[in-house]
Image (tube, rainbow, N blue to C red; front, side):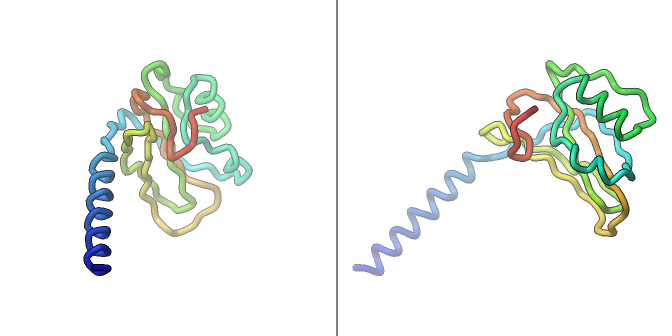
Length: 139
Protein backbone atom coordinates (compact mmCIF):
# COMPACT_ATOMS: atom_id res chain seq x y z
CA UNK A 1 0.00 0.00 0.00
CA UNK A 2 2.84 2.40 0.88
CA UNK A 3 4.57 1.69 -2.46
CA UNK A 4 1.35 2.40 -4.35
CA UNK A 5 0.86 5.66 -2.44
CA UNK A 6 4.44 6.76 -3.15
CA UNK A 7 4.04 5.85 -6.83
CA UNK A 8 0.75 7.78 -7.07
CA UNK A 9 2.36 10.81 -5.38
CA UNK A 10 5.31 10.67 -7.80
CA UNK A 11 3.00 10.48 -10.83
CA UNK A 12 0.86 13.39 -9.58
CA UNK A 13 3.94 15.47 -8.80
CA UNK A 14 5.39 14.84 -12.24
CA UNK A 15 2.09 15.84 -13.82
CA UNK A 16 1.94 19.08 -11.83
CA UNK A 17 5.53 19.94 -12.75
CA UNK A 18 4.89 19.26 -16.43
CA UNK A 19 1.72 21.35 -16.25
CA UNK A 20 3.46 24.33 -14.63
CA UNK A 21 6.37 24.11 -17.10
CA UNK A 22 3.93 24.15 -20.01
CA UNK A 23 2.13 27.10 -18.45
CA UNK A 24 5.40 29.03 -17.94
CA UNK A 25 6.38 28.99 -21.62
CA UNK A 26 8.68 31.81 -22.60
CA UNK A 27 7.93 33.89 -25.68
CA UNK A 28 10.77 34.97 -27.97
CA UNK A 29 11.17 38.74 -28.14
CA UNK A 30 12.60 40.26 -31.30
CA UNK A 31 15.79 42.30 -30.87
CA UNK A 32 15.25 45.15 -33.34
CA UNK A 33 18.72 46.77 -33.32
CA UNK A 34 22.04 46.17 -31.54
CA UNK A 35 25.23 48.07 -30.77
CA UNK A 36 28.38 46.52 -29.36
CA UNK A 37 31.71 47.67 -28.10
CA UNK A 38 34.41 47.50 -25.48
CA UNK A 39 35.08 49.62 -22.40
CA UNK A 40 38.58 49.57 -20.91
CA UNK A 41 37.90 51.65 -17.78
CA UNK A 42 37.40 49.06 -15.01
CA UNK A 43 35.63 51.64 -12.78
CA UNK A 44 32.69 51.79 -15.19
CA UNK A 45 31.79 48.13 -14.59
CA UNK A 46 29.81 49.02 -11.46
CA UNK A 47 27.30 51.11 -13.46
CA UNK A 48 26.27 48.48 -16.01
CA UNK A 49 22.46 48.44 -16.28
CA UNK A 50 20.32 45.41 -17.21
CA UNK A 51 17.95 47.76 -19.04
CA UNK A 52 17.77 51.37 -20.18
CA UNK A 53 14.35 53.02 -20.11
CA UNK A 54 15.03 56.68 -20.91
CA UNK A 55 16.90 58.83 -23.41
CA UNK A 56 18.79 60.54 -20.55
CA UNK A 57 20.03 57.21 -19.17
CA UNK A 58 21.09 56.05 -22.65
CA UNK A 59 22.95 59.31 -23.33
CA UNK A 60 24.79 59.06 -20.00
CA UNK A 61 25.95 55.51 -20.79
CA UNK A 62 26.86 56.43 -24.38
CA UNK A 63 29.13 59.24 -23.20
CA UNK A 64 30.65 57.36 -20.26
CA UNK A 65 31.48 54.35 -22.43
CA UNK A 66 32.74 56.64 -25.23
CA UNK A 67 30.67 54.96 -27.95
CA UNK A 68 31.64 56.59 -31.25
CA UNK A 69 28.24 56.47 -33.01
CA UNK A 70 25.68 59.18 -32.31
CA UNK A 71 23.27 58.40 -29.48
CA UNK A 72 20.33 56.68 -31.17
CA UNK A 73 16.78 58.02 -30.93
CA UNK A 74 14.64 55.36 -29.22
CA UNK A 75 10.89 55.57 -28.66
CA UNK A 76 11.07 54.66 -24.97
CA UNK A 77 7.28 54.63 -24.68
CA UNK A 78 7.33 51.51 -26.93
CA UNK A 79 10.84 50.08 -26.52
CA UNK A 80 13.62 49.58 -24.02
CA UNK A 81 17.30 48.86 -24.40
CA UNK A 82 18.67 45.68 -22.82
CA UNK A 83 22.30 44.77 -22.29
CA UNK A 84 24.64 41.81 -21.93
CA UNK A 85 28.23 42.00 -20.72
CA UNK A 86 31.40 39.92 -20.70
CA UNK A 87 35.06 40.16 -19.79
CA UNK A 88 35.84 37.87 -22.72
CA UNK A 89 37.07 39.18 -26.04
CA UNK A 90 33.88 38.43 -28.00
CA UNK A 91 30.20 38.74 -27.09
CA UNK A 92 26.84 38.51 -28.82
CA UNK A 93 23.27 39.00 -27.72
CA UNK A 94 21.87 35.49 -28.12
CA UNK A 95 18.22 36.40 -27.65
CA UNK A 96 15.50 37.55 -25.31
CA UNK A 97 12.53 35.64 -23.89
CA UNK A 98 9.54 36.98 -21.97
CA UNK A 99 7.79 34.75 -19.43
CA UNK A 100 4.19 34.91 -18.18
CA UNK A 101 5.26 36.96 -15.15
CA UNK A 102 6.74 39.75 -17.27
CA UNK A 103 10.39 38.83 -16.72
CA UNK A 104 12.48 39.39 -19.83
CA UNK A 105 15.44 37.02 -19.83
CA UNK A 106 18.27 38.42 -21.96
CA UNK A 107 20.92 35.94 -23.02
CA UNK A 108 24.49 36.66 -24.06
CA UNK A 109 27.01 34.35 -25.65
CA UNK A 110 30.68 35.13 -25.16
CA UNK A 111 34.18 33.75 -25.12
CA UNK A 112 36.01 32.76 -21.95
CA UNK A 113 39.31 34.49 -22.68
CA UNK A 114 39.44 37.34 -20.17
CA UNK A 115 40.52 40.82 -21.21
CA UNK A 116 40.80 44.17 -19.43
CA UNK A 117 37.55 46.07 -19.05
CA UNK A 118 34.34 44.61 -20.44
CA UNK A 119 32.51 44.03 -23.70
CA UNK A 120 28.84 44.97 -24.13
CA UNK A 121 25.98 44.47 -26.53
CA UNK A 122 22.97 46.77 -26.28
CA UNK A 123 19.74 45.70 -27.94
CA UNK A 124 16.39 47.39 -28.57
CA UNK A 125 13.30 45.31 -27.72
CA UNK A 126 9.61 45.99 -27.27
CA UNK A 127 8.68 46.92 -23.70
CA UNK A 128 5.21 45.35 -24.07
CA UNK A 129 4.52 43.24 -20.99
CA UNK A 130 8.03 43.65 -19.54
CA UNK A 131 8.10 44.17 -15.76
CA UNK A 132 11.62 42.97 -14.97
CA UNK A 133 14.81 42.19 -16.92
CA UNK A 134 16.80 39.19 -15.74
CA UNK A 135 14.81 39.34 -12.50
CA UNK A 136 15.62 43.00 -11.78
CA UNK A 137 12.97 45.74 -11.78
CA UNK A 138 13.10 48.30 -14.54
CA UNK A 139 14.81 51.57 -13.60
